[in-house]
Image (cartoon, rainbow, N blue to C red):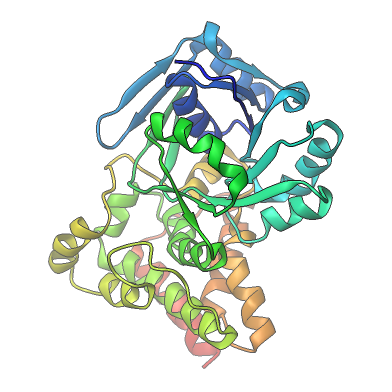
Length: 343
């Protein structure tokens, strides 16, 4: 049953189309703003929303309101900002000229500072920090697949309350937090795998089934945890294991890891990281907003971060092309050498 609330997805990529599509499939009024390529694809095919548990929902093309123009912002009650982090300030300026009084904005983006960037451009507006913990991959022809488990996370605020029922009806219940900074850092630690997955050029489940790749992620996470400890930041617990236990889990032999990981996080065999998606499509990645955040904070608190700095450099090389075919052992040796050089 449709409600009188109007949602707008600003940034109709994988996350935006999936979250907005689930809302639309459950009867919510959703308008999408995206790039020409996605607009034409969705207009031709409609939306198909699938997940690792077997969900398979469709929104016919005739019922999807999608455009490149930002006019839909002027009537939206809740705007979901899902653009790439590098486009956040421009998105804020567009919102500032069109947002209606009383509208709520929530940033469902990677990285740590997007909501604050939006607040700076939108003084006096309700701008909330949000987080999408699950992986979504674009599969073409308007199909978007959520390949891992997780619940939408958001900053606790009364302005979000009128929309919670709509998210719940869509199968996307929102968990609210008083301290979203701790949640964001915890997600960022998990997302340090994105660069490794992109370099591996493998589905996430296949990559994480091999100890050499996992040890690469463990090196990056241990470095990140050292930086956070020096900065006095305690990341939230988003999985059954606390963040400081996860590097040790990643280093376990394959058989032991396989048993324990099944209890920690469900991942579909087809899932890949958003960074792999960007490299595959020839787009600039968000590595500066993930591994790069560890490097910048490390510089601030004077903790060396050679592993994450090396991953940033390798992703930049891959963006420039041609891509190198890494093995897990070769990348592990490369990162280990980088760490030892700074020891």
